[in-house]
Image (tube, rainbow, N blue to C red; front, side):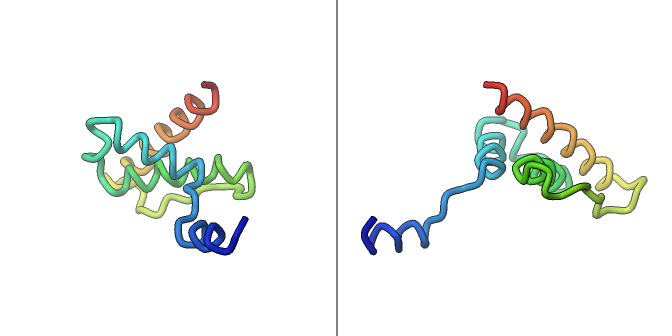
Length: 90
């Protein structure tokens, strides 16, 4: 690899598996763009946890329990887990 290729890779790092799955979900799912930020955060938090292969041992909800944001975050967690399993079993 020459210096130009190394610099290009440095400036344009590859997406992680979690980022690729999230990007595919947002792009290919008509509703994906319209989910709340809390849902998207939960979805991505789960993908990052799975991508880390157990390096993180738990997820903590960043929202107060009983709020719409917490409910959306937990839905994102569930859907992120399901999407991860779908992608890994292809």
